[in-house]
Structure formats: C-alpha cells, structure tokens
Image 1: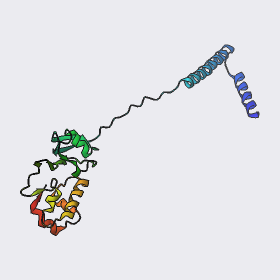
Image 2 (image 1 turned 60 degrees about the vertical axis):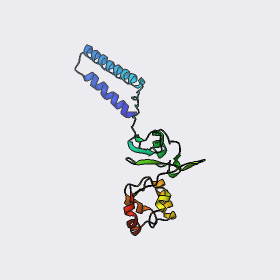
Image 3 (image 1 turned 180 degrees about the horizontal axis):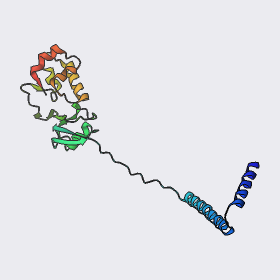
Length: 202
C-alpha cells in the first residue's frame, strides 16, 4: 500500500508541475484514455477469436511394386506386376487362376513373392479310366525349379529323403536363383553337388 501511495503522490506531483496549460492537460488525458480503451478492446477481441488449425490432408503412399513371371498350369501365363507384399496365391490369381489338372500341392501359396522370380505351377498326373495323362519324361539337365521329387531321386547320390528336402526347401523359400543354391539344402555338400552339377539347371 505504501508503494502504491508513493506512486500516486509522484504522479500527482508530476502532473501539477507539468508545464502544460489546462487545455493541453485535458487533451493529454483524453488521448491516454483512448489508448487504454483501444488496447483493452483489441485484447478482448483477440481472445474471442478461435484459432482453427489448417485441415490435415492425408498423404497416400504408393506401395512399391514387383514383377513376377507366372508359368505352367495357369489359365493366362505371363509376366505380372503386383504389390511388394503379394503372395504366390496372388500371382496365380493374376494369371487367371490355376488351370484344370494343376498340382498346387508342390507350391507354398502363402509365401511372399520376390521381384523377378518365376512361379511355375506343375500339372498333376491323372488317371481317368482307360486314359492316362502323364508328364513327358525330361531329357537332358533337369530344371531344379520345376523338377518333381522322383526326378530329383533319379539323380546320382540323391535319394528319396534328400529329394523330399529339396521339394520342401523350394516350397518354403521359392525358386532357386542358381544351381549352387541347391547346396543350401541339408544333405547336399560340395562333393554331392559336383556329382550332379552337370545334370541340373535353373
């Protein structure tokens, strides 16, 4: 309170000692009052306006694409562009779905595809009465991405157990990129691979 009274006394002393006429003092009071009123009005109006944030525009990110080759027992074999998260079943559907007599049991339909790979759908061996439909016997090096278990079994040093491992490995991991990838299968070492190297291809 004492500080406030001291301030008031100083202002009063300054006002009376001000070397202004009575009219000038009144004009000064009016101007000061207008400044206070305008400042107060500006503050009040500014607080009443709601600040709206700019609308958020969602950004759509395009999924990367891959290209795969679908061949074999499908209705429309060919090269197709799919999303990077597509699976083998999506590639087969893109190729018009599997053709009658297709053997999907040798393919892992749930496997995620890789760019540039080939999906080959085998034809099943069927017997209908007197008519028999069989695969043609392969001549020359066998394609390790298409060979059946019996074809692997026919290779020197590859018995039914390792042949089954090759089919299971291919079903889980997809097509082999090179013939050397066959050594990733358990039971196929350097010596055994050298023994069958000339009889296989991709």
